[in-house]
Length: 411
Ligand SMILES: Cc1ncc(COP(=O)(O)O)c(C=O)c1O
Image 1 (cartoon, helix red, strand yellow):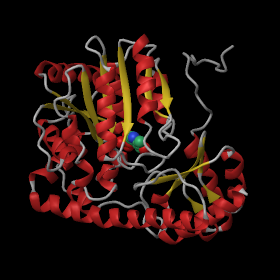
Image 2 (spheres, rainbow, N blue to C red; image 1 turned 180 degrees about the vertical axis):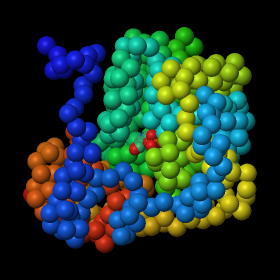
Image 3 (tube, protein in one colour; image 1 turned 135 degrees about the vertical axis):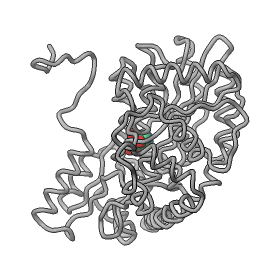
């Protein structure tokens, strides 16, 4: 029997409250009761300053404040304004100039890009492949559209990227499916902070090429939601040329979001960008993705598209935005290093970490440990395989204090 009164379940698992928002609410309640100093809220997936305010790039706000009414009142074309489509490709690719067909379609956040990719490049009932540690919303998005998520272990026994596991699962799925969507979230993966190395990428692409026989289709969704908070932006884009001109039955789609990069989380600004050696595949990409957009959210927020276009049309302004972001990126990297160093010092095992908003601690009984920590005013997110810490929302000092406290709660 369905748990719903009027609504239809349609095979979906719909919790009463989103886990992250639920725990965040508990943290806020404790702050209201005991004060700010008594609580360490490491649940939020947004970058907060050391005084716990949301970091908002003032150079972006300035552009936003100077928009004309028509910039935000008018509908945007379904796939995004032409200026935006050019700007977002520049933002995603940086200095790299792809030597293949690339097309961008606007989406409301990286979430929309992932949604449209699954919708158009897998069949209803298909299984989508990603790693065991993954952003929980992949499950919801797939589930909502009658697909499900299957995982491989992200790391092997030596804590290396588990290419054999990925290959094995991909082969299993392609034995029963005509097409396969693989989601790779890198760099600064949520929830572990892991970034694929260039060698990982070579191994991954070799495995995918070996698996995608000419009668099969593989779509590689590269979710780069945190690419501009991982470190040097050029260095972290060095993998992109490897995606150029793969066999035509392997389609890389970059899910590039302005949520973190331009601190426009609420403006719902992003794009899905395809990279293919075949012009017709790029044209088809625009056609099918625009159709899905029209049928779900229709068009995206024009104001954010104009903001991004203006930034990329003015090199002085772009330099200002990049410089401001770089300051906050350094702040975040320091927090990450502090957390990893301290974990190492006290002997707390963490999942291989490189950079970004999150780090994770592997453990079996994450719910239990999390509840213990909550009693001490420490709020983390319990996952199936461990605990997620948002280093983006706590100070460097707290990052240094936290590992010992987690270890104590685990003992
Ligand atoms: C791994 C990952 N991908 C994509 C997103 C999408 O965010 P948005 O839809 O705001 O761009 C998030 C946001 O938390 C994320 O953590």
